[in-house]
Length: 398
Image (cartoon, rainbow, N blue to C red; front, side, top):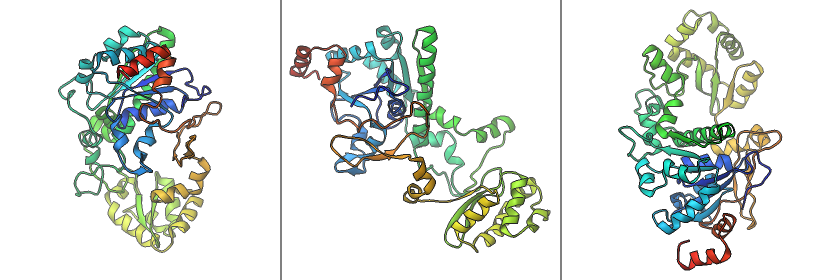
């Protein structure tokens, strides 16, 4: 189960205390770049995500999507003897990742200051709902709560349709991504200072950061962004248009593309129409312009428009369901859907990393671990002898 030694993070040992999504996503990114990730799970059932459906032959696809290529050991950190075993892991670890509420890890004695006394070189990654301190720091955090409090739901969906969450757990995923980025940065800095440090992020911070220019509109101009549905908030016309057999996304970013688009539509007169001639005019008359465009796009199929508009240099694309997306020629060429190797010959096909390194590419090295599957192996490699492991088992410590 141990990751390949050929990855760019080969030699980095990560102790993963996290559960569900944000933390496991963070450690997945490191595992598939060659780090050894040891997942420490609570003894009663392990990571809660193991019970999340859908299931394939009794195995959670949710759990598999973010825990492949890791090892699993079961420890009860509330038990003094088992925490000693955990501390032994920390002595040789480079990274620890956790997503406990801030007060919980302090009660367990596994907060940053406590861990740093065991291993001052360790990089300690924390993902919380709202931050490690402040008025909300003890609140439990969930993705949808962060989407709402982070402003995203107020700008998602059709105008007047009420708040709308996006279709993926974007706050969880981006918090995991940012935590991984912070950890790798801290590991680089450690090469200079010789010391680890505490890397912190939260679902709320990640969500706010992802607002990007929508947040800047308020911070710089006091302009509150609103729901715009499928329309781009500032680039017009950009949005979803009906075709003869479905829908198409079209993006006209700038005057030159707008002119090319009008020509490709067979409606060059739109360019000289004073109601659409300038970007401010197109913004003011967005609905009327979209209606004009819609009358023309309905005359041809999506495939035809995609071919003709791309030939004219106008950004566009079909709108796929997930099954259609995986059948697309470019998606298949990129090879992002990958088989996960496993000795049991199970069918495990998941989405690989979206970043390609020319010499040391990422890889799916192993299937998701069974609960506590590598306990003996991990204990042996971290200094426990055969008799000690037997004694730990007999004492029901592991």
